[in-house]
Length: 467
Image (cartoon, rainbow, N blue to C red; front, side):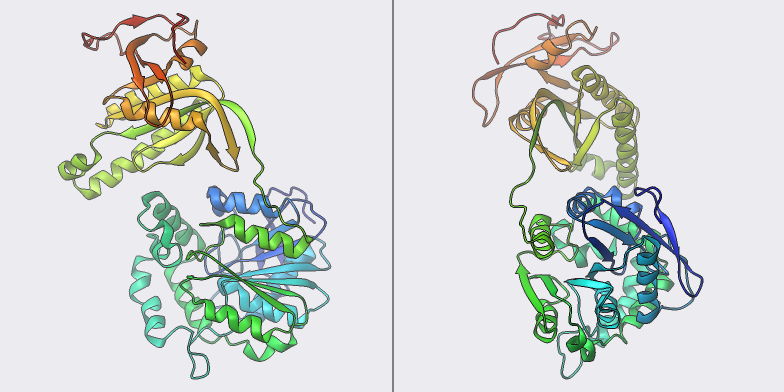
């Protein structure tokens, strides 16, 4: 049994392998998530989209996630496992958590195994959810929607030369193609999930998958979900829904193959309604007072021209490590990356200002120039994201900052009164899309910096007119 539901545990299979799994939530029904080609039960949770997806599932179910044999934290194997062996993995995990019956959610490559499991162990599969998956992997005369032999050889050859570099992002998450941070994450996920040799064996094992003949034997209620422009071809999902007796299909907008990317809420709404009979139509919104910080690198295009692409990528990696470390040091939270910068929030304005100064000075030591904008106000918490006028205002403040500036609103100056932080009056400004005139201030530069003629020292705590 699971002792710590946030921890990774191991289930022993009938053939002596250890399968890594985690349990999240304690809802009235069990939901076993069967992953696709890549998985890592711990690393995936570093992705805010996956983490938010898992949190929503665990709000109405006890969610069990695991790495199949050969993947992630589970035992590595020689060659590719069969569907029967993978079904043994699922059964071992369910036994380990004391689950007599569960809904199985089979995603992508994990779908055929869940179909086999549902047909073979109907008393242990209370319902079946199939996401972006198929009954047959390869193209056939009577199934023209599968993978072509040419594509299979590409997947097993040239594509694997880029395995570990985020090659899957462009294929499976087209909405994120071009996002360097997402590509780095995908690359690390690929490396942690499986080696190129293992992936090749999995692709070739997939080539033999064909569970079309057992579709009529699946008697459990089934929900088939597919995005309309999913690169794996929605017609495969329509075939499943037409041949599983108690199946219903929902076609969703979008093109991303990972369900937690893109409009994840639509996916979650369908799953929740299928399992509970109720739809969670509105996001839970909480309002809190927070200090919002936007950072942005200055002159990144010219810097790339000067140092070259390779050196610039290394500098960006150093930038990310430093900023993340400073966010942790000053007890903030990184909300998201914004291209050449980040959006972060803090529960104290003094820590936010000191964080911004540390970022400016630390990146200067790397030869990078940044500008930062800060505002304190009420924000709306939406999962891992934030929104509201305070966010927009901080972004507008950052856009007015000059290279090397930490620019803040009057609100921040008033809130840090007595902190010892000194500011320079940067004048009154109109902020695009925001009513009124806003008095802005820059954090006073170090004592050895050359003062600018229009900067005027303003001690904290001084009352000023304006919002």
